Length: 356
Length: 137
Figure 1 (tube, rainbow over the protein chains, first blue to last red):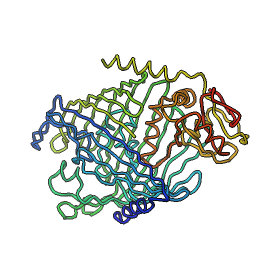
Figure 2 (cartoon, helix red, strand yellow):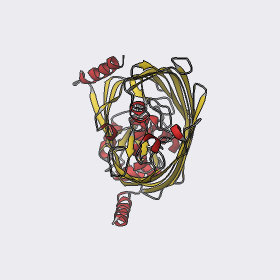
Figure 3 (cartoon, rainbow over the protein chains, first blue to last red):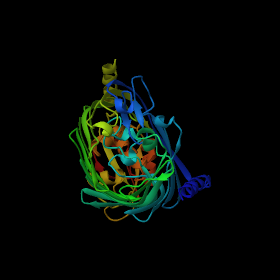
Figure 4 (cartoon, rainbow over the protein chains, first blue to last red):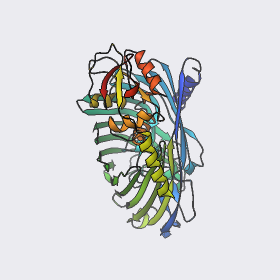
Protein backbone atom coordinates (compact mmCIF):
# COMPACT_ATOMS: atom_id res chain seq x y z
CA UNK A 1 0.00 0.00 0.00
CA UNK A 2 2.72 2.41 1.04
CA UNK A 3 4.92 1.48 -1.93
CA UNK A 4 1.97 1.72 -4.28
CA UNK A 5 1.03 5.22 -3.15
CA UNK A 6 4.64 6.31 -3.27
CA UNK A 7 5.08 4.87 -6.73
CA UNK A 8 1.86 6.50 -7.90
CA UNK A 9 2.88 9.90 -6.57
CA UNK A 10 6.34 9.71 -8.14
CA UNK A 11 5.04 8.31 -11.41
CA UNK A 12 2.42 11.03 -11.51
CA UNK A 13 5.05 13.72 -11.01
CA UNK A 14 7.39 12.19 -13.59
CA UNK A 15 4.79 11.52 -16.27
CA UNK A 16 3.70 15.14 -16.66
CA UNK A 17 6.92 16.71 -17.90
CA UNK A 18 5.19 18.90 -20.45
CA UNK A 19 1.83 19.80 -18.96
CA UNK A 20 2.85 20.31 -15.34
CA UNK A 21 5.00 23.00 -13.87
CA UNK A 22 7.25 21.39 -11.25
CA UNK A 23 8.33 23.61 -8.39
CA UNK A 24 11.50 22.66 -6.58
CA UNK A 25 12.17 23.96 -3.11
CA UNK A 26 14.20 22.72 -0.22
CA UNK A 27 15.87 23.15 3.13
CA UNK A 28 19.17 22.26 4.70
CA UNK A 29 20.93 22.38 8.05
CA UNK A 30 24.63 22.03 8.70
CA UNK A 31 25.11 21.71 12.44
CA UNK A 32 28.14 20.64 14.41
CA UNK A 33 28.46 20.00 18.10
CA UNK A 34 30.07 18.12 20.92
CA UNK A 35 29.65 17.24 24.56
CA UNK A 36 31.23 19.49 27.12
CA UNK A 37 30.52 16.95 29.88
CA UNK A 38 28.37 13.91 30.51
CA UNK A 39 27.91 10.93 32.80
CA UNK A 40 26.81 8.26 30.32
CA UNK A 41 25.05 5.25 31.85
CA UNK A 42 27.41 2.71 33.44
CA UNK A 43 24.61 0.13 33.71
CA UNK A 44 24.26 -0.07 29.90
CA UNK A 45 27.97 0.55 29.21
CA UNK A 46 26.91 3.83 27.52
CA UNK A 47 29.66 6.43 27.15
CA UNK A 48 28.79 10.10 27.88
CA UNK A 49 26.09 10.96 25.32
CA UNK A 50 23.74 13.80 24.44
CA UNK A 51 20.72 12.24 22.73
CA UNK A 52 19.64 15.23 20.64
CA UNK A 53 17.14 13.40 18.44
CA UNK A 54 15.34 10.30 19.67
CA UNK A 55 13.58 8.97 16.52
CA UNK A 56 16.71 9.07 14.35
CA UNK A 57 19.11 8.38 17.26
CA UNK A 58 21.12 11.60 16.75
CA UNK A 59 23.82 11.58 19.42
CA UNK A 60 26.66 13.95 20.33
CA UNK A 61 29.71 12.54 22.08
CA UNK A 62 33.13 13.82 23.17
CA UNK A 63 34.38 14.41 19.63
CA UNK A 64 32.95 17.04 17.27
CA UNK A 65 30.31 15.61 14.95
CA UNK A 66 28.11 17.07 12.23
CA UNK A 67 25.77 14.11 11.96
CA UNK A 68 22.93 14.39 14.52
CA UNK A 69 21.29 17.64 13.34
CA UNK A 70 22.57 18.08 9.78
CA UNK A 71 20.10 17.28 7.02
CA UNK A 72 18.84 18.33 3.64
CA UNK A 73 15.42 18.13 2.03
CA UNK A 74 14.25 18.57 -1.52
CA UNK A 75 10.58 19.08 -2.32
CA UNK A 76 9.05 18.62 -5.75
CA UNK A 77 5.53 19.90 -6.31
CA UNK A 78 3.73 19.40 -9.59
CA UNK A 79 0.42 21.08 -10.31
CA UNK A 80 -1.34 18.48 -12.47
CA UNK A 81 -4.70 20.03 -13.18
CA UNK A 82 -6.76 22.75 -11.54
CA UNK A 83 -6.65 21.95 -7.81
CA UNK A 84 -4.70 18.67 -8.05
CA UNK A 85 -1.04 18.60 -7.04
CA UNK A 86 1.50 15.87 -6.41
CA UNK A 87 4.23 16.49 -3.85
CA UNK A 88 7.28 14.46 -2.92
CA UNK A 89 9.88 15.31 -0.34
CA UNK A 90 13.25 13.64 -0.23
CA UNK A 91 15.06 13.95 3.10
CA UNK A 92 18.62 12.89 3.97
CA UNK A 93 19.80 13.11 7.56
CA UNK A 94 23.31 12.96 8.96
CA UNK A 95 22.04 10.58 11.63
CA UNK A 96 21.25 8.12 8.79
CA UNK A 97 24.56 8.83 6.99
CA UNK A 98 22.64 11.10 4.56
CA UNK A 99 20.92 8.06 3.10
CA UNK A 100 18.03 9.96 1.51
CA UNK A 101 14.49 8.64 1.34
CA UNK A 102 11.01 9.87 0.50
CA UNK A 103 9.57 11.18 3.75
CA UNK A 104 6.54 12.66 2.05
CA UNK A 105 4.78 11.60 -1.15
CA UNK A 106 1.18 12.60 -1.51
CA UNK A 107 -1.53 13.83 -3.82
CA UNK A 108 -3.46 16.90 -2.80
CA UNK A 109 -6.83 18.00 -4.10
CA UNK A 110 -8.39 21.36 -3.33
CA UNK A 111 -12.13 20.74 -2.83
CA UNK A 112 -13.04 24.36 -2.26
CA UNK A 113 -11.74 27.51 -0.62
CA UNK A 114 -11.88 25.86 2.81
CA UNK A 115 -11.09 22.15 2.37
CA UNK A 116 -8.21 20.17 0.87
CA UNK A 117 -7.94 16.36 0.74
CA UNK A 118 -4.54 14.65 0.72
CA UNK A 119 -3.58 10.99 0.35
CA UNK A 120 -0.21 9.33 0.60
CA UNK A 121 2.72 9.38 2.95
CA UNK A 122 3.07 12.32 5.34
CA UNK A 123 4.58 13.25 8.69
CA UNK A 124 2.34 12.64 11.70
CA UNK A 125 1.23 16.07 12.99
CA UNK A 126 1.43 14.90 16.58
CA UNK A 127 3.29 17.61 18.45
CA UNK A 128 3.41 21.25 17.40
CA UNK A 129 6.73 20.91 15.56
CA UNK A 130 6.34 17.27 14.39
CA UNK A 131 5.38 17.91 10.79
CA UNK A 132 8.11 20.52 10.17
CA UNK A 133 10.68 18.97 12.51
CA UNK A 134 13.29 18.81 9.70
CA UNK A 135 12.77 22.41 8.58
CA UNK A 136 14.83 24.00 11.33
CA UNK A 137 14.86 27.37 9.58
CA UNK A 138 11.14 27.64 10.41
CA UNK A 139 11.64 27.61 14.20
CA UNK A 140 13.77 29.24 16.85
CA UNK A 141 16.08 26.54 18.22
CA UNK A 142 18.56 24.15 16.64
CA UNK A 143 15.98 21.38 17.16
CA UNK A 144 12.64 21.00 18.93
CA UNK A 145 13.50 19.94 22.51
CA UNK A 146 14.45 16.26 22.48
CA UNK A 147 12.60 15.42 25.72
CA UNK A 148 9.26 16.13 24.03
CA UNK A 149 9.95 14.68 20.61
CA UNK A 150 10.78 11.17 21.75
CA UNK A 151 8.34 8.99 19.82
CA UNK A 152 9.67 6.29 17.52
CA UNK A 153 7.07 6.72 14.76
CA UNK A 154 6.93 10.01 12.86
CA UNK A 155 5.36 9.20 9.48
CA UNK A 156 2.11 7.61 8.38
CA UNK A 157 0.46 6.55 5.16
CA UNK A 158 -3.19 7.43 4.83
CA UNK A 159 -5.67 10.17 4.17
CA UNK A 160 -5.75 13.71 5.50
CA UNK A 161 -8.44 16.38 5.22
CA UNK A 162 -7.41 19.91 6.10
CA UNK A 163 -9.46 23.04 6.48
CA UNK A 164 -9.06 26.76 6.85
CA UNK A 165 -11.75 29.27 7.89
CA UNK A 166 -11.59 32.96 8.65
CA UNK A 167 -13.62 34.43 11.55
CA UNK A 168 -13.02 38.20 11.44
CA UNK A 169 -9.39 38.61 12.59
CA UNK A 170 -9.08 34.97 13.65
CA UNK A 171 -8.05 32.13 11.45
CA UNK A 172 -9.37 28.66 12.28
CA UNK A 173 -7.52 25.80 10.64
CA UNK A 174 -6.72 22.17 11.20
CA UNK A 175 -6.94 18.67 9.87
CA UNK A 176 -8.37 15.20 10.42
CA UNK A 177 -6.31 12.18 9.42
CA UNK A 178 -6.32 8.41 9.44
CA UNK A 179 -3.78 5.81 8.40
CA UNK A 180 -1.03 3.51 9.60
CA UNK A 181 2.72 3.09 9.78
CA UNK A 182 4.67 -0.16 9.63
CA UNK A 183 8.35 0.45 10.33
CA UNK A 184 10.22 -2.76 9.46
CA UNK A 185 13.28 -1.93 11.55
CA UNK A 186 12.59 0.91 13.91
CA UNK A 187 15.79 2.81 14.55
CA UNK A 188 15.13 4.07 18.08
CA UNK A 189 13.83 0.75 19.43
CA UNK A 190 16.30 -1.45 17.53
CA UNK A 191 19.46 0.57 18.01
CA UNK A 192 19.13 2.68 21.12
CA UNK A 193 16.61 1.08 23.47
CA UNK A 194 17.60 -2.47 22.53
CA UNK A 195 19.79 -4.63 20.37
CA UNK A 196 17.21 -6.89 18.64
CA UNK A 197 15.58 -5.62 15.42
CA UNK A 198 12.13 -4.26 16.28
CA UNK A 199 9.27 -3.96 13.80
CA UNK A 200 6.99 -1.21 15.11
CA UNK A 201 3.43 -0.86 13.85
CA UNK A 202 1.02 1.95 14.63
CA UNK A 203 -2.33 1.07 13.06
CA UNK A 204 -5.91 2.38 13.12
CA UNK A 205 -4.48 5.85 13.56
CA UNK A 206 -7.20 8.51 13.83
CA UNK A 207 -6.23 12.05 14.74
CA UNK A 208 -7.08 15.69 14.48
CA UNK A 209 -5.55 19.11 14.91
CA UNK A 210 -7.35 22.39 15.59
CA UNK A 211 -5.50 25.72 15.39
CA UNK A 212 -6.71 29.19 16.18
CA UNK A 213 -4.48 32.12 15.21
CA UNK A 214 -4.43 35.83 14.90
CA UNK A 215 -1.40 37.94 14.02
CA UNK A 216 0.46 37.53 17.34
CA UNK A 217 -1.38 34.62 19.00
CA UNK A 218 -1.38 30.94 18.11
CA UNK A 219 -3.33 28.21 19.90
CA UNK A 220 -3.30 24.53 18.90
CA UNK A 221 -5.04 21.38 20.11
CA UNK A 222 -3.97 17.93 18.94
CA UNK A 223 -5.41 14.46 19.54
CA UNK A 224 -4.57 11.03 18.16
CA UNK A 225 -5.51 7.46 18.95
CA UNK A 226 -3.78 4.35 17.58
CA UNK A 227 -3.17 0.63 18.12
CA UNK A 228 0.41 -0.47 18.73
CA UNK A 229 1.73 -3.82 17.52
CA UNK A 230 5.37 -4.83 17.83
CA UNK A 231 7.66 -7.64 16.75
CA UNK A 232 11.01 -8.09 18.45
CA UNK A 233 13.40 -10.24 16.44
CA UNK A 234 10.36 -11.53 14.52
CA UNK A 235 8.43 -12.52 17.66
CA UNK A 236 5.23 -10.69 18.50
CA UNK A 237 5.49 -8.69 21.72
CA UNK A 238 2.82 -9.38 24.35
CA UNK A 239 1.83 -6.65 26.83
CA UNK A 240 -0.17 -7.86 29.87
CA UNK A 241 -1.39 -10.87 27.90
CA UNK A 242 -2.48 -8.78 24.87
CA UNK A 243 -0.77 -8.58 21.50
CA UNK A 244 -1.85 -4.99 20.81
CA UNK A 245 -2.15 -1.93 23.02
CA UNK A 246 -3.93 1.36 22.55
CA UNK A 247 -2.26 4.75 22.73
CA UNK A 248 -4.12 8.03 23.12
CA UNK A 249 -2.22 11.25 22.62
CA UNK A 250 -3.45 14.74 23.49
CA UNK A 251 -1.61 18.05 23.41
CA UNK A 252 -2.09 21.76 23.80
CA UNK A 253 0.21 24.50 22.53
CA UNK A 254 0.13 28.27 23.02
CA UNK A 255 2.56 30.56 21.21
CA UNK A 256 2.84 34.31 21.39
CA UNK A 257 4.90 36.60 19.16
CA UNK A 258 4.26 40.12 20.42
CA UNK A 259 6.42 43.27 20.30
CA UNK A 260 9.51 41.17 19.56
CA UNK A 261 8.83 38.84 22.50
CA UNK A 262 8.41 35.19 21.68
CA UNK A 263 6.77 32.81 24.13
CA UNK A 264 6.44 29.19 23.05
CA UNK A 265 4.77 26.44 25.05
CA UNK A 266 3.51 22.94 24.60
CA UNK A 267 2.06 20.35 27.00
CA UNK A 268 1.26 16.80 25.92
CA UNK A 269 0.15 13.48 27.38
CA UNK A 270 0.36 10.05 25.83
CA UNK A 271 -1.62 7.37 27.63
CA UNK A 272 -0.36 3.96 26.55
CA UNK A 273 -2.11 0.99 28.14
CA UNK A 274 -3.02 3.08 31.18
CA UNK A 275 0.45 4.57 31.73
CA UNK A 276 0.88 8.32 31.28
CA UNK A 277 3.83 9.83 29.47
CA UNK A 278 3.81 13.58 30.09
CA UNK A 279 5.87 16.15 28.24
CA UNK A 280 6.01 19.92 28.20
CA UNK A 281 8.23 22.70 26.98
CA UNK A 282 8.41 26.40 27.55
CA UNK A 283 10.69 28.80 25.66
CA UNK A 284 11.16 32.54 25.62
CA UNK A 285 13.07 34.68 23.15
CA UNK A 286 13.51 38.35 22.41
CA UNK A 287 14.14 39.63 18.90
CA UNK A 288 16.72 42.42 18.57
CA UNK A 289 16.82 43.16 14.84
CA UNK A 290 18.40 40.04 13.39
CA UNK A 291 19.43 38.46 16.69
CA UNK A 292 17.07 36.41 18.83
CA UNK A 293 18.54 35.12 22.10
CA UNK A 294 16.41 32.48 23.80
CA UNK A 295 16.05 30.19 26.81
CA UNK A 296 14.14 26.94 26.90
CA UNK A 297 13.10 24.21 29.32
CA UNK A 298 11.62 20.84 28.32
CA UNK A 299 10.55 17.92 30.47
CA UNK A 300 9.59 14.26 30.07
CA UNK A 301 7.90 12.43 32.93
CA UNK A 302 6.47 8.91 32.94
CA UNK A 303 6.13 6.15 35.54
CA UNK A 304 9.89 5.69 35.66
CA UNK A 305 11.60 7.57 32.82
CA UNK A 306 12.20 11.19 33.79
CA UNK A 307 14.45 13.74 32.16
CA UNK A 308 14.63 17.41 31.32
CA UNK A 309 16.72 19.79 29.23
CA UNK A 310 17.58 23.43 29.90
CA UNK A 311 18.83 25.29 26.85
CA UNK A 312 20.14 28.75 26.04
CA UNK A 313 20.97 29.91 22.56
CA UNK A 314 20.81 32.55 19.91
CA UNK A 315 19.43 32.70 16.38
CA UNK A 316 21.04 35.18 13.99
CA UNK A 317 19.18 35.86 10.73
CA UNK A 318 22.33 36.95 8.91
CA UNK A 319 20.80 36.36 5.46
CA UNK A 320 17.29 36.49 3.98
CA UNK A 321 17.18 32.70 3.60
CA UNK A 322 19.65 31.52 6.22
CA UNK A 323 20.10 31.67 9.97
CA UNK A 324 23.10 30.91 12.15
CA UNK A 325 22.29 29.30 15.49
CA UNK A 326 24.28 28.54 18.61
CA UNK A 327 22.84 26.52 21.48
CA UNK A 328 23.95 25.10 24.80
CA UNK A 329 21.96 22.19 26.27
CA UNK A 330 22.04 20.81 29.80
CA UNK A 331 20.27 17.43 30.14
CA UNK A 332 19.31 16.05 33.51
CA UNK A 333 18.39 12.34 33.46
CA UNK A 334 16.52 11.58 36.68
CA UNK A 335 15.64 7.98 35.83
CA UNK A 336 16.92 5.20 38.07
CA UNK A 337 18.33 1.85 36.90
CA UNK A 338 16.73 0.72 33.64
CA UNK A 339 14.71 3.92 33.47
CA UNK A 340 17.80 5.93 32.59
CA UNK A 341 18.04 7.04 28.96
CA UNK A 342 21.48 8.51 28.27
CA UNK A 343 22.53 10.01 31.62
CA UNK A 344 23.27 13.67 32.31
CA UNK A 345 25.01 15.69 29.64
CA UNK A 346 26.01 19.19 28.61
CA UNK A 347 26.64 19.98 24.96
CA UNK A 348 27.14 22.82 22.51
CA UNK A 349 25.82 22.87 18.94
CA UNK A 350 26.16 25.52 16.23
CA UNK A 351 25.58 25.89 12.53
CA UNK A 352 23.41 27.20 9.74
CA UNK A 353 19.81 26.50 8.65
CA UNK A 354 18.62 27.58 5.25
CA UNK A 355 15.70 27.29 2.86
CA UNK A 356 15.57 27.68 -0.90
CA UNK B 1 34.11 41.03 13.35
CA UNK B 2 30.59 39.67 13.87
CA UNK B 3 29.43 42.93 15.37
CA UNK B 4 30.86 44.73 12.42
CA UNK B 5 28.88 42.45 10.11
CA UNK B 6 25.70 42.98 12.10
CA UNK B 7 26.14 46.73 11.87
CA UNK B 8 26.87 46.57 8.15
CA UNK B 9 23.88 44.33 7.46
CA UNK B 10 21.58 46.50 9.57
CA UNK B 11 22.71 49.63 7.74
CA UNK B 12 22.34 47.88 4.40
CA UNK B 13 18.77 46.96 5.35
CA UNK B 14 17.94 50.55 6.32
CA UNK B 15 19.35 51.84 3.03
CA UNK B 16 17.49 49.18 1.01
CA UNK B 17 14.23 49.86 2.77
CA UNK B 18 14.40 53.57 2.12
CA UNK B 19 11.36 53.93 -0.08
CA UNK B 20 8.71 56.39 1.03
CA UNK B 21 5.51 54.40 0.58
CA UNK B 22 4.12 51.27 -1.04
CA UNK B 23 0.82 51.33 -2.88
CA UNK B 24 -1.37 48.22 -2.80
CA UNK B 25 -2.89 47.91 -6.26
CA UNK B 26 -5.72 46.01 -7.99
CA UNK B 27 -7.19 45.92 -11.49
CA UNK B 28 -9.00 49.20 -12.40
CA UNK B 29 -12.31 47.27 -12.75
CA UNK B 30 -12.07 45.87 -9.19
CA UNK B 31 -14.44 47.86 -6.93
CA UNK B 32 -13.26 46.20 -3.71
CA UNK B 33 -12.14 48.23 -0.69
CA UNK B 34 -9.54 46.65 1.57
CA UNK B 35 -8.10 47.40 4.98
CA UNK B 36 -4.71 46.30 6.27
CA UNK B 37 -5.97 43.10 7.92
CA UNK B 38 -7.66 41.97 4.69
CA UNK B 39 -4.49 42.64 2.69
CA UNK B 40 -2.52 40.68 5.30
CA UNK B 41 -4.98 37.79 5.04
CA UNK B 42 -4.47 37.56 1.25
CA UNK B 43 -0.67 37.83 1.41
CA UNK B 44 -0.32 35.24 4.20
CA UNK B 45 -2.46 32.59 2.51
CA UNK B 46 -5.22 32.78 5.14
CA UNK B 47 -7.78 33.67 2.53
CA UNK B 48 -8.14 33.33 -1.22
CA UNK B 49 -11.06 35.65 -1.93
CA UNK B 50 -11.77 39.37 -1.68
CA UNK B 51 -14.40 40.41 0.86
CA UNK B 52 -16.97 40.56 -2.00
CA UNK B 53 -16.44 36.83 -2.63
CA UNK B 54 -14.38 37.15 -5.81
CA UNK B 55 -11.24 35.06 -6.17
CA UNK B 56 -8.02 36.91 -5.33
CA UNK B 57 -4.63 36.24 -6.89
CA UNK B 58 -1.85 37.96 -4.93
CA UNK B 59 1.50 38.83 -6.53
CA UNK B 60 4.50 39.32 -4.29
CA UNK B 61 7.68 41.24 -5.09
CA UNK B 62 11.01 39.42 -5.04
CA UNK B 63 13.23 40.08 -2.02
CA UNK B 64 15.61 42.09 -4.17
CA UNK B 65 12.92 44.72 -4.83
CA UNK B 66 13.12 47.64 -2.36
CA UNK B 67 9.35 47.74 -1.75
CA UNK B 68 9.30 44.13 -0.49
CA UNK B 69 10.94 44.72 2.91
CA UNK B 70 8.84 47.88 3.33
CA UNK B 71 5.62 45.94 2.62
CA UNK B 72 6.60 43.02 4.90
CA UNK B 73 7.34 45.33 7.82
CA UNK B 74 4.66 48.05 7.36
CA UNK B 75 1.71 45.94 6.19
CA UNK B 76 2.39 42.40 7.44
CA UNK B 77 4.27 43.57 10.54
CA UNK B 78 7.09 41.04 10.04
CA UNK B 79 10.64 41.04 8.74
CA UNK B 80 11.30 39.30 5.42
CA UNK B 81 13.12 36.56 7.40
CA UNK B 82 10.07 36.00 9.59
CA UNK B 83 7.87 35.74 6.50
CA UNK B 84 10.27 33.22 5.01
CA UNK B 85 10.15 31.11 8.19
CA UNK B 86 6.33 31.37 8.18
CA UNK B 87 6.06 30.17 4.57
CA UNK B 88 8.68 27.43 5.07
CA UNK B 89 6.46 25.86 7.69
CA UNK B 90 3.44 25.88 5.37
CA UNK B 91 5.22 24.89 2.15
CA UNK B 92 7.06 21.87 3.58
CA UNK B 93 3.98 20.54 5.38
CA UNK B 94 1.63 20.87 2.40
CA UNK B 95 -0.52 23.54 4.08
CA UNK B 96 0.03 26.45 1.77
CA UNK B 97 1.74 27.97 -1.23
CA UNK B 98 3.22 31.47 -1.13
CA UNK B 99 2.08 34.11 -3.64
CA UNK B 100 3.95 34.09 -6.92
CA UNK B 101 6.97 36.42 -6.85
CA UNK B 102 7.75 38.89 -9.61
CA UNK B 103 11.07 40.66 -9.99
CA UNK B 104 10.14 44.35 -10.22
CA UNK B 105 7.49 47.04 -9.69
CA UNK B 106 6.98 47.10 -13.47
CA UNK B 107 6.25 43.34 -13.64
CA UNK B 108 3.79 43.49 -10.74
CA UNK B 109 2.05 46.50 -12.28
CA UNK B 110 1.75 44.70 -15.64
CA UNK B 111 0.44 41.51 -13.99
CA UNK B 112 -2.19 43.43 -11.98
CA UNK B 113 -3.23 45.54 -14.99
CA UNK B 114 -3.82 42.32 -16.96
CA UNK B 115 -5.84 40.33 -14.39
CA UNK B 116 -9.19 41.35 -12.86
CA UNK B 117 -8.55 39.09 -9.82
CA UNK B 118 -5.01 40.27 -9.11
CA UNK B 119 -3.66 42.20 -6.13
CA UNK B 120 -0.10 43.41 -5.73
CA UNK B 121 1.96 46.22 -4.31
CA UNK B 122 4.64 48.50 -5.73
CA UNK B 123 6.61 51.59 -4.81
CA UNK B 124 3.92 54.32 -4.70
CA UNK B 125 6.08 56.45 -7.02
CA UNK B 126 5.65 53.83 -9.77
CA UNK B 127 1.82 53.92 -9.86
CA UNK B 128 0.06 54.95 -13.09
CA UNK B 129 -3.46 54.76 -14.55
CA UNK B 130 -3.15 51.08 -15.56
CA UNK B 131 -3.89 50.02 -11.96
CA UNK B 132 -6.04 51.17 -9.07
CA UNK B 133 -4.62 51.97 -5.61
CA UNK B 134 -6.57 50.49 -2.66
CA UNK B 135 -4.19 51.51 0.10
CA UNK B 136 -0.89 53.24 0.84
CA UNK B 137 1.42 52.25 3.67
